[in-house]
Length: 387
Ligand SMILES: Cc1cc2nc3c(=O)[nH]c(=O)nc-3n(C[C@H](O)[C@H](O)[C@H](O)COP(=O)(O)O)c2cc1C
Image 1 (cartoon, rainbow, N blue to C red):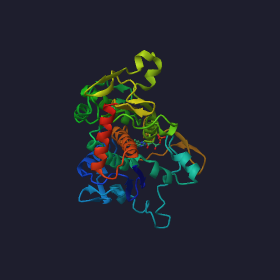
Image 2 (cartoon, protein in one colour):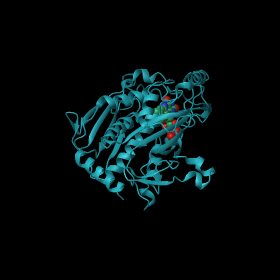
Image 3 (cartoon, helix red, strand yellow):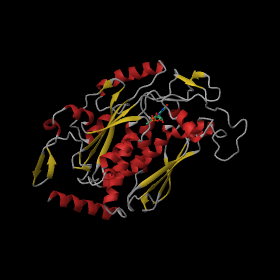
Image 4 (cartoon, protein in one colour):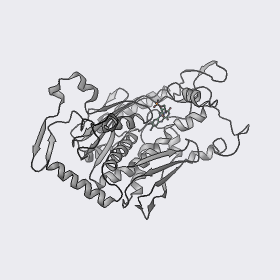
């Protein structure tokens, strides 16, 4: 089963990731990983940091001549901005009067600053914000894009896109395939499936930035051709919809997760929500609709997986909110760390969904070697078709 860990501070020398459990024999497309990283950095409404960083992944373990070995994959993404922070973020030199400049003592409401300081006993809240910063999500994207490449080898495809920014909601065509959605979101700099609202949303972001404020939004991820039966109804912690919800909520700033119709299902009748069952000789078992977003009993049911995430607005405000200085206890405006008005988080949510689907597949089938993994999954699909 795959697993991963990330390390590294926002302005430290680099981000590090270790991904275990990827089958041997997967030909990696490094350019595609870097395209995912660029998607996390791009988009309208980003701050200056993204002009400094041009994220590319370096692979230093677990891969030979572009092909995975089955051993842990070691990944690095350099922080170019570290050049401006080399002394302050030096991992080993002892603290001095000059390399402890730029301390943060006025916690930002809605960020990890205050509680992180209280919990870990830090008096310089930079020790919290450097790790709680979503800079870390760059590594989750790199890992997720590797998982996405593995999923593609099983003919499983997914995409994450933006459905809402602030109050502006796109009425997306929910029947679009992953390929069609990919093509649509590539047409604009907001990852929106319908370009009609782009000018309006650009204006909204510009006006919000001018006002020193920030925006949140809603992200939707669709995954197609996931075999039925991943996850299990047998124990609460084996339910894959629960694991997906945890992973999505584990992305910085996510405050809500829905599967399928989610909260809307609560106000409908059962007859409007349950997806009626169908069977045909060629395709096997299916559902006539997909209100339940591809899950029944914590297990995939073979329909497209649909996960939505609600992201709160970015907490760092250039027009800062009220806070209290932790050194003086005097009421002060919160500190401001270079920040964005809104962020392209849909690639991050897409990546963590790819990771969890890969985890479920490698937990269910022998994932030591890609060819065997593919054969086993193909045989399993055929067994289900004939059920
Ligand atoms: C891709 C991405 C980029 C983000 N960029 C910023 C940012 O520039 N400034 C900021 O204050 N928060 C940013 N956030 C959100 C914070 O990291 C997050 O709100 C904070 O860590 C507190 O965690 P919580 O919101 O999950 O409680 C970003 C989140 C994501 C997913």
